[in-house]
Length: 364
Image (cartoon, rainbow, N blue to C red; front, side, top):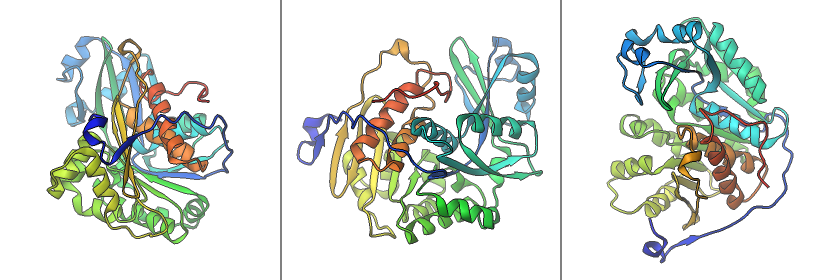
């Protein structure tokens, strides 16, 4: 999208930041989602052949893939990285905030060695975890197979699909929810049996206490197959994140025929439960300008160019953007700074393998 095509209602900003940071209290940012443990290793081509994989595949594991997780751990040098869309965003936000235990995360894991590793990773990152443990399924894992710099991903959702809403209603979790100031959910729990109920309980608390609830469209298939559930939660969302593919699918579902900024405007204008703040819609487009719609206006935020030779892995870029954005929102900064921080976080993460965090951010 070019600015000249949208000059009638879109403006471009080149905001450069406040140059200072703000402390936030413990548990100020709370996320709910599907926790996964990424198990990453460099592998030979024979492993791809053995498991009938093509380099670059991104798939859900079936039975023939199940042994690969233990094989990686036993036979290769592996990196364990806490993963899953919401958890990734929360980890990045914690990294950006530089305030001890400023973030917390809720999700379901198995009672196994992988949940212990996941807990260790999050603790190392400074995220307070409130996992529901189940014996019905193993901890969700994602095998990350690196061959000649190409990544092949095989996800086994496992326990992540089995979160029980009753866990959220416990006295301990009610205290965790009550002390949070900002709430974030990726859309993926909408595909689980009790995910929607948990998301709605967080939405309603946020609305009743005038706190922002943030939602991510997350994937086109959620719009295609979980539309009714998505609409229920979207009704409560103060901030909605997505990328250009998800926005296009949303527009298609609604029967709209318009460009991306207009799609963002229309979503922002949809009915919502809380009238205390407008809905803000944030659509990223990779290296192209980020589209933000709110209060009947669209603003385009340019993304700093990064040379291709510096890009290692773009898979976590969207989650990183959300993490940077949420960090600044939790600190009370204006939308311009939230977007700038999101761009910064995404730029850092795509220069790493997976959502691996450098020692500390250097954003001014």
